[in-house]
Image (cartoon, one colour):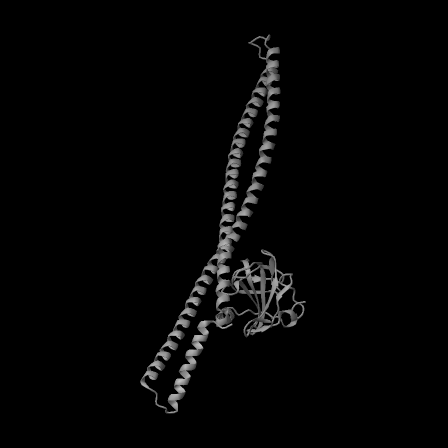
Length: 380
């Protein structure tokens, strides 16, 4: 059902056209009718300006929310990387700690063994001394001198060894304490980052909800259609710039048609060529994927773009030579940067819902000389 505003607007336009038509016929109208017509024209202009301002305000709000969404999604991605790096550090710290504990246990056992040997030597030494205590103090028996020197040498050597072991054990204990402290600090950092990511994810969810409401409210005014068209224009511009920056001497994908592996295993949510909205059709395909699932290159190539792109989220663009490119969007984390060489089947990103998507998935495109191709006909 049409709104009251729409009916009023239509009535005003009808009145204006009737007024203009009568004037064209050369009919003379009373002055009161001329003033009324002028008022109608003024009212129409005011209504048009009001609607333009309303649409402009809605577009500005959408731009503001999209900017905030980008900051949050990129922030979440960065925190994910930090959490992964911290987890690796924590694992290594635990390994180091275990190794030092083994070393300490071995040294402790060695120390106990040598203490036992030393105790036996000391006891033997004193027993020998006691047995020889009846001998003349003026005795010059060379055997006694050798025995005495022998035991003194062993006692000194064992004492020095024990001192070194005690020092080593002290150092290892200090290292163990340092590693324990490091592990605690990393664990605390990991927990803090996890909390921060959850906070960002929550904020992102509310932002996406707002974006969805705005798009819904302005879809009838073709603003959402214009947004999709602008997103596609941005994508084409980035592809063109990437192609100029990077000349990749490779053979392209011509021989691989129907042989390429899927970038991720999952059901197709949106197929190439199907209607997206209005007169805009999908230029690629959207594949369902678990959050954080590995996204793999379908063929070897060079990364020519790895950044956030409005409407597509975190994107990786691979150049395979001969004007052939593949695009991977909506990612949660990018594992490659511009200029990196990748092999076929190599993980280049982790699946996500960036770009304001409702659920985790992958947006996948194949382009030949900037013209979109049906990805399904290229995949095996």
